[in-house]
Length: 515
Image (cartoon, rainbow, N blue to C red; front, side, top):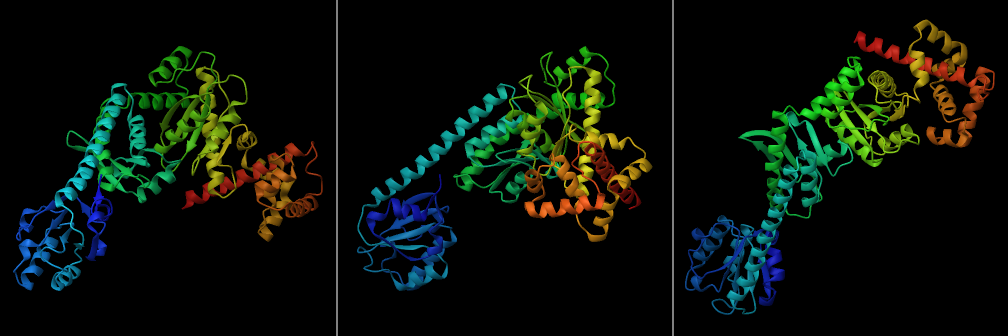
């Protein structure tokens, strides 16, 4: 571990009563060795980083210019500092040496108590060597742990997790073009990029002379930068081998999962036996009675979607499989409990770490090719609606479900003219008021209906005071002329609101097409 000049003075030279006469800004210089010598022309024999101890005997009888040269040469050799014992050659430090050291910002230290240099050197250098031995031991332990991960057949995420625990800071693995490949110690892709922006160290990850990735360490480690780089270099080798092997094998499990989901979306799998076999090839082996919940994810950095899905599955102790088809990420999740509301459980698991992602959770499906195909197609369609609503500022939830979007999906099957008629007939006056006044009564009405007409939950969702909510609801009631909370009007109003949002999505699509 690195010792600074300040550390050496405080820990090992304190008995010599040191007084820093110049170069205070150099007290954080790294000290690589503590050396004593009386040779005047010692500079060329030093490699940099040494703290030099001397009685000044080699400076006795020389002129002021020669003493200045002595200081200047040590500074040019990047020596950490020089400590001169007072009372043998000099009763006090020569003024020209102090001025020269100050001019070149070089630490010049007077030792005002006589202490055998051998004791000072032994103490400081033992500390330096023990730090280096400790780092070597930690490197050795880490190397053994990472090779055990490789021998167990574990991939880059497991290696990255081990390495992050060893250095105690966030780690991000960047591929070609700075694409985000994996991360550990961060909550989402936004946090990963924050760690990259605030990086403390980075090392290349290569294999057979080819750069395959870059390993970046974010802030937080207690290791000094040099030791941190040293530890990262231990991990770079196993990561390079693992990444290269995955690439040479075509990333078989990941490719198998993506191919499977693609075929299911296109309804190209008929037999249950084929489905089970291909799930196994993707490393996913749910029980015969398991219910699989399809999930579709839209995220700015596609590679982070698998980490998001894996984290959500882990929170509920569920098996999962992740796949990428074109620009959309998918997951199949097999909840550990057959009973209970799996959809709500999975929605909550994703919501705790969704970040900038939009996630739609589908309905549970049996281990049946046709049912799973339909479920994936439905969740893909629902995701496109959720993404469009979020982009248009319709205040949609970041994580929702096919169940919650059932009315939207039904409205999407209607012709444009029917949707327009439905919206105008039920909520036309509310839409007109919003258009004229720039208000959000339409959104308020839908939020209130979707929260079971509970004033408490609606006000919280809209970030309004209850009195403000009541004023809006009174305005809406006056515009449409009937009680919108009545059971017989409730379903029709919700469909009309969905139809109105569908019109907005359609207009946005036409506008993008025109651009």
